[in-house]
Length: 197
Image (cartoon, rainbow, N blue to C red; front, side):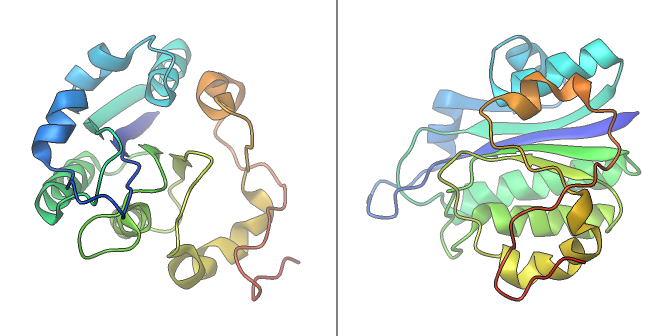
């Protein structure tokens, strides 16, 4: 099994006038390729948990980008585009993969966008298609606004098969407990128009 692995994490404060640029990502975490595994293995983070669980199960990871910056203002369009383009190019080169693991925050706001994670997830989905699992970890204070517009059609056919985890660290620390098959379980509606059979 081959799983694509990436992290883009930022908690944006749109009231801050301090833009989040490449230097802020470099000051905290900016890693590429196999360096990601060495930098995050056994760190107790979401990304570290994904790596540890994959290694215990013999899953081959295809690491791409691991970028995190401390909370500040909007992510500059330049660094967002660079990170997104690198991630998507790596994913295209690695395809086909059996799944995608994305460690995101859920409150990233790049310049010119309201929803960095939604934009990124949508782009990843376009590369891998509708049937490849894309697992995303998000902080508890997420703001993924594109879901009602862009994801409803993709989620409705499999709504009863999506795993929703509302426990810190459960998805990363206990990843080895799941055998990567869909588990039938309803989720909360994505919007007022979503119905479940």
